[in-house]
Amino acid sequence: MSQPPPRTPGTKQRGITLGRVLGARVVLMPSTIVMALILAAFYGTGADGFSRQGFSIGLAVAILLFVSVFLHELAHTAAARAFGREVQEIVLTFFGGHTQFRSSDPRPVEIGVIAAAGPITNAVIGAGALAAAGAFDGMTGRILSYAGLLNLILAGFNALPGSPLDGGRVVNAIVWGVSGDRWKGHRWAANGGRIVAIAVIVLAVGIPLLTGGSVDIVAAVWAMFLFSVIWPAASAELRAATVLGRREKVTALSLAAPAVGVPFDATVAQARQVAATAGAREVVVLTADGQAAGHFPVALTEAVPEEARATTTLMSVTMPVVRGAQIPASATGETLVEAVVPWFGRTDVLVVTDEDGLPVGVAKLEEIREALS
Image 1 (cartoon, one colour):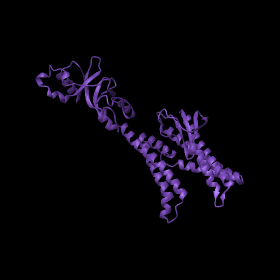
Image 2: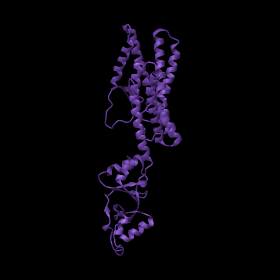
Image 3: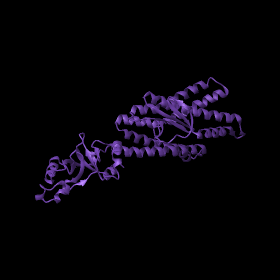
Image 4: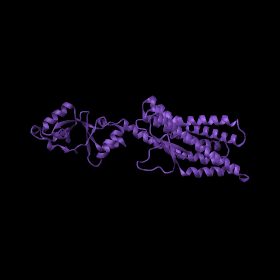
């Protein structure tokens, strides 16, 4: 996989550091060594008991799998570097790995190319190893054959069109590039991942049962393991894409009641006239330096007798606003979230301002929270 969900800042990646390649720290998870020995023991134990030759073959297969995964992740790293991305880590596990790189302001073509680099590399290595295997006899030929098959399996599986597999990243990039909707690409890839997860179970368990055959225990265990990895990851991406996609369609101005600013020394009558001209439902009271000091709904001024409105100051109807509690009208998505979060618990409303810093709306913080959740 080209990039997993980012870790919490300040946390340290566990594992054994093997060195650095193309600027990235290469990390080997301890479970890889354990699983390599288990695979070697599995191959080494047959109907006739333990076999050194079988153990050697199993260990060779485990090492080949490790090398294949490393080359897969190295291809992701090289592709990311080609696009000028800083690669932080290559993490290797027995069941795969991931490459962590900085992906601020990504483009569809980058996501697609970086994701496709891994499976393509494995496919090329696999085809080359199988072609070379025919030129060798004995153990060397068998190992090359195993290497070829392992790489082709890695290529084929990772190319499946669903998250969190590389094929899912490619689907995301294509849909995003065609539609222009980043989160639509994520939703397609996530749904593809769910389909892949179900298909794995159907192929390993469902079809044998429906056709009257027997279920291979090893295949069933692998299928359940893959399902337990793919389904939760795809589901999490689908939920995140749904929420984030909805956020991208929400702007601060769309959540605000239209407002207009008036000086603090204006009268109720003057404020009503300015609001009527601007078509505003809220009035923002401005201090001498132009900062918002309070607000009130225009409807609230109906409580002031008509004959007294020309002499009544705004203090009688104004509700205070925390100084600086404002957000730009164009704020949307994560920008809107970042602008709003610091004000939770400090105020009930935010003043929405235009490019010149003038009030154009008043938004309730609770309504913004509901729209973004």
